[in-house]
Figure (cartoon, rainbow, N blue to C red):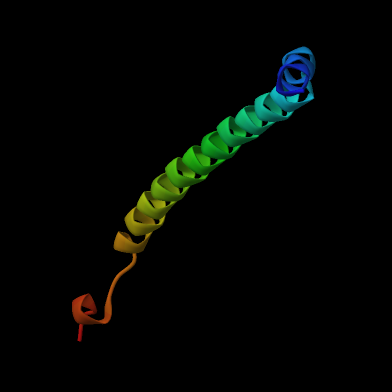
Length: 62
């Protein structure tokens, strides 16, 4: 009975397909998170540079 169950599991590839889809999904999520992180860091730097170009109240002539 146990051998029959193990034999059926070896022949079935439904579980393997689900695992493959899970791995692909995990890689896609990691790529998206990495892209968003890189874009956010770059955008933050651009806004900081732009903000430095504006005069502040301390530098205004009197």
